[in-house]
Image (cartoon, rainbow, N blue to C red):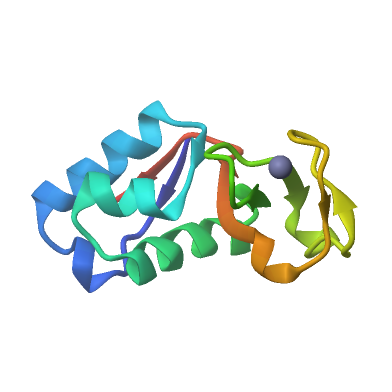
Length: 118
Ligand SMILES: [Zn+2]
């Protein structure tokens, strides 16, 4: 268990901080929109919290790659590997992806420890 001093104004009240800690206690993998939806903060704020955990080496960061016609990601890459170089063959539908606008991206953070903000 790693305890971290809360430094965000948007988690200043006990209720939203409790929601954040509950979320961190039950998930190993978190996406920014999940954190925002569960705690009531906005996406930028969710990204700040998760990037801070990445900076503290308490989370791994992955880039999820979506082929626009599928709801599930088709690739999961370490952030250090960056964006995929086109063209690629979609692992799901086997079509060749040539243009950047056929792809969408999201972030996935994998927590490496139990974390509590105090
Ligand atoms: Zn596809």
